[in-house]
Length: 458
Image (cartoon, rainbow, N blue to C red):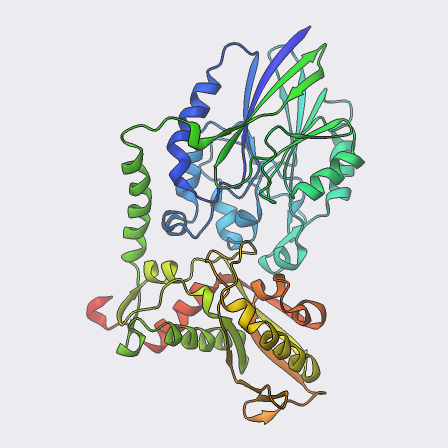
């Protein structure tokens, strides 16, 4: 018995709502295709990004509402859903979703399955072909752990899920947010996989990639492309898979699109602008250095340290004098980053400062992408409690020369642990990730205490 499917897929949309009107129309038309026996629609995670005001203001509920309109068959989550949200936000994220979330490798702290997810799902076509879906997200215990989740490694998860569904499926499809390198590893080690609908590494694989028996697909990032796969089967077994991607730019615009897209931004802006944070003095008016210095104090206060580091490129705009709102903070610091308390021996702190100074000129105008950064350039590094005499190569901590044998605690960001410029932090730092507040929330809470709103503006 012959059978044909059409599989539509997206990944790493990251709240790029400017593409949503076109994507919505493309999916709706494709889902009505009667030339095939079945149409399925999947998303491979990172569909939300709190750098967009509407996502931030609604904690992702606006994304869920819009994605309900895309009529997804199923999706899995990415790190932006799993790590960039506090635990309780993720617990409620899918309360109003019209689609199942497939995720095999995440557990609550008591090892129970999250109430909003299933490890696998079996679909049955009109011609009685059984499709097993398994969902996997990037296994980052260093950041899932502090957010009160237990994330599981991919191999042990696959072994467990495959054992559970043994004999129950004809076709195996994975929805993964693990990146192309790990997708290739999965394909090589689990040849029973027919198709991987992937994400995370932002690779555009225009016509798929075949690894042994398995096809791997990914559509790049931000909704710039939509995946559209043709599948042929005979007697419930796949005989042909033809992956394709369609550029969103090639899809027709409609007159109302721009107004709809602007409406998403303006609604988020309005919601966040109504939430007043602090009443800042004149020194903050258009002064980025004042914003950096106040933020250094904020992360040090939050981490309970004397020392802190931050880079100026994090600050997309300065703060302002007068009433500071959540929109102002989100506009200035859109990055989903968390504060880290790093403990370093004095000799290692000295080495970290030498790494910062060595890279200072290079990083000042370095264009950076990824690792939770939503800006353009890395910028200048600023210190709290640290001074350095590069001529003599001496580092001073709170006015005294650093003691090589003493332990020091430094407030920094998970971003600095991830970027490759300061290896000392990642290699020898005892790094404690402080959840759930984002950098901007930490800064906002500090400013609210230091420069409180008067009663008449609350």
